[in-house]
Image (cartoon, one colour):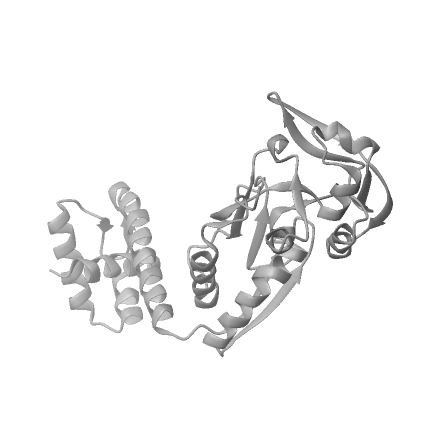
Length: 301
């Protein structure tokens, strides 16, 4: 007996409310539907419908079994749809978001390469230094740095980043190297206009602390603030990926590394969906593979 076909027949009968209507909906004959139902009930060892010459109604066992059958048929349909998507070329509009500098340095180049591989996909990239509500703002995929607060999202770990304090070698030669975060209070610092007036968090003997800082120069964006630090205008606090290339080229030096807080997690997030569009699913798996193990935590020192 074809159990799957018999299960479909049972659901059609329950939905149609009669054997005749179910046969018409299925494009089958009435005798074939009657035989399928009888064979299914015999196989299960239970009566699924109360039947009279005028009406048909689900038994208690039939009602319970109907819910299970619907779940099975839905799962099969979704599995078939997913397979069809696997065979199809990803296409359509993909929208993603990332922090500004991370997007500039790491996401934008990956998106360009992805679009070169998948010419039917269009991409809209929003670089924003704020937490974006993916569902409310119609975003398919997002990059998040730091602890995740929205448990409704699927999160794929990518790596970690540090929050570091840096200065140019020339500035350190003139001003000296700080030995404790509190030394920053009296030192020239390059600040963020939209940032906190205290830097941190730092860790000192197991305790977290923040240090108030001041400076003659403040920006509302990290890139010019980094340039100012390279030019010797003072200390700056940034995420490690933002200054990694400048540390590697020795244009900047990391200080106070022994007081740094724990590295911040980096995740790729996207809304729960039982069946993601092929463009989203393929992009997620590709970018996770490209960025997995992303780590600027080992940036010297």
